[in-house]
Image (cartoon, rainbow, N blue to C red; front, side, top):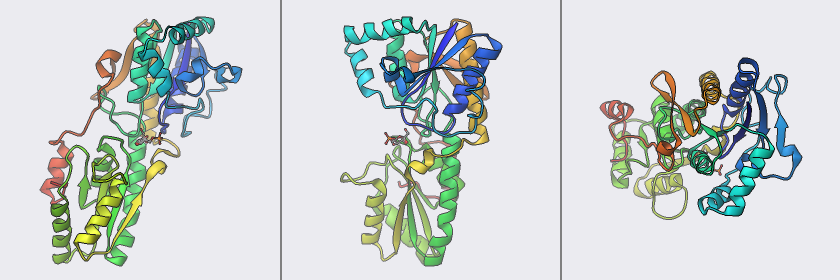
Length: 340
Ligand code: F6P
């Protein structure tokens, strides 16, 4: 059998560990051939011969600990739109190229958009296996995605550092973290770094209550506060959520406020050991499914087991933080404020 691997959507630490997991399992354990498809789904139709590479054990070595993706990635919205519109020309070009490359399956490493595109590819007759990845941890159908643990480690370490400067100046530090429409990074990093206020898209916020809570902390002699804001928090205007929160607190109270947007460092650098091993397990299981001919599915984490679900089940859905998440319940018991 011959497998193609591609990565699509936002990059995250662990993609290369997945490529290595799929590739080495296929080459060594199953005797399959493996190629890399560069720059996301658009690489399938690329005319540039360098956008396709053969993998061997040597080319799969030394990548386990690397951030980013050796295959490159892209958002692939046009590619997906053309399939959705059932563009005959686009679909036949994909199938023609798939046969030219003599592929038996394409492993699609990516987040929600990627799994949606993989599902569309399956619908036009391409054998696909989805491997969920994103720092956002918002892929429906899997307990966790690789990239998330690394991002939480990075964000937690950054927020830890802000405590000392906030304390020195007796300030309110507002920190914005990534997560797209979900609040998973804000919740986990906020709780791990001892934030006093954590604002999640799923819960929303009452700015009067936020300001009152911070003023109350000051009245109780708490010299500084850490406010963690998920980037997807809905706020008036078109600016960054952290800007709105910081500016409004400044206007409503006499407190000194500063803000920090962690941005893309949450997606940078080497994957955590947890993410390396999760990516390796998911990659190996994806290859096992290919060997068994189980296509059109996404590998997933279910408790401490690796399994799979049909791509039709995850496509178009988001996994958001539930209001009664145990970290929220426990945080409230310790007077951490979640905005409402
Ligand atoms: O999906 C991962 C992510 O980092 C989100 O947290 C963030 O909102 C988005 O990607 C940024 O997208 P881009 O990399 O296209 O700017």
